[in-house]
Image (cartoon, rainbow, N blue to C red; front, side):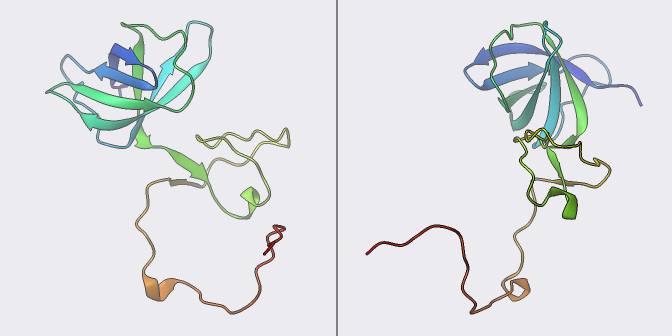
Amino acid sequence: MADKFGYITQVIGPVVDVAFEGEGNEVPPIYAALKIERENGGELIVEVEQHIGENTVRCVAMDSTDGLKRGMKAIDLQRPLSMPTGSQVKGRLMNVIGETIDHLPALDYTELKSIHQEAPAFDDLSISTEMLYTGIKVIY
């Protein structure tokens, strides 16, 4: 499948507008992740938050937008922001896009789950009367 891509038209703080023009370059859906390759070789992930006009989307950057400029290419990853799941993530530190930041061995990224999920039904929640130890002391 060919990559769908657009070009940055505006950057205002963490907000990035991307235009998708040309045949086969329809706008990505809300909550889709886009990847922008920086000139220094790094990558910036942005998330589509709003459709503005026929071929333009408004996105929020997941990191600093320093160095971005109009005309830079944004590639549609054709998936929402996703995080690794399962027992492998217990006790690990990750940034907002699911990359580990604790200098421990890399995670297995085959089991990913979108960060946008329906809330669980009230009946599915577990209710317990046991004490929850958080390490925070309460002072009256």
